[in-house]
Image (cartoon, rainbow, N blue to C red; front, side):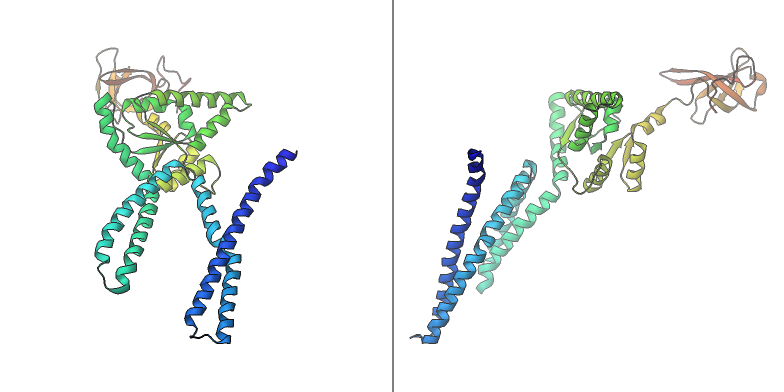
Length: 376
């Protein structure tokens, strides 16, 4: 117990000691400054009143130094230390890069400014150089994500030359539902999605919570998502970036994704219908795999009911030929005598090859055309 108390109070004792010495230094420093100022404005020889005023200035300076010196010196240092500890390494690198660029521009500007006459030539170069460094560092940090995307774009052709991998264009945020779905990997391999997939750490945490859930279904979905994400990370044709980007003051994974997409100007890949609607209302580009699947699905499946205009005769079995709006041929049995008419049919099967698709069907009410399973 005594050892714990000693450990607890050692840092506090050290902190008080630093405050004490800074106060003492500030007391002597400001006290001397008050004495120096009083001596400069006093006449020679000094009168009793001037001597009293000088002593009063020295005492006032010493008192002010004793009270505020640690606030003026130590508090900014502690605040800077706290901010540096809470800043990730990527932000520090970007700040340092921006500061370096600002230093170069500031140094170039000080050359002509130092030629100005009087006080302008003495003080203006220092002020302009400090402002150039500050605004360059802050501006670079504000465009960190654009800078990262630009550097990735520069490196992409080199990767292609070494390993014949495709170059990647824009970067898209990925939702938990899209990862669990698993089709995103096949879409990336097909070449229809040419992007860097950005998975924020809070999405990864949601997958981990699902994988550790007591509910069997949630646990299975979470583990499937983690497994698929691990497989995609190992896939040379898929580029995944796990980032620590977050949005302060926003709760919920969906809300954070929307806020992050707006903040960084990125598209959002998701299968969540509600999230898609919220994102689209805020003018965020949404890539929904379900919408993509609907776009490339067959024009009809067995059991569908449709209306087709019979335009020409078929080759056998009294067939009639019609066409869908996309040009897909529809072969209708026992429809040769219905040329020019619109007939209601039930799709019996869909035949596809490398040349396209053909739909086969029967007229409603004819032999073999059953309403059972027909989709209106």
